[in-house]
Image: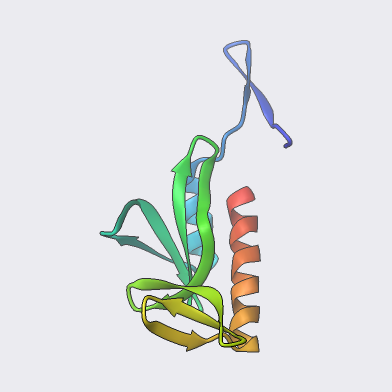
Length: 117
């Protein structure tokens, strides 16, 4: 881990990402930000059918779990069913096409980069 040390009152303190600044970067990059009653401490980042839950930590916002496919108010997780990949949320199933998998891959990478910036 690389630390950005800044002098403050003659003490060295590592720079911690500001959650508000992280949310602003994410929003300006075209992500929709949502809150959910089921996850009161999290913020959802949504774009192109993908969703990730962001949770505040002492190190700034971080993804909680793995991003998935937005299925109504639920997150479809990537699973294998009958020898094929699908996104599943309870009983609802959506095919994990090559396009959807690529969209999810790009979503995850860009969101990770925005959180780390």
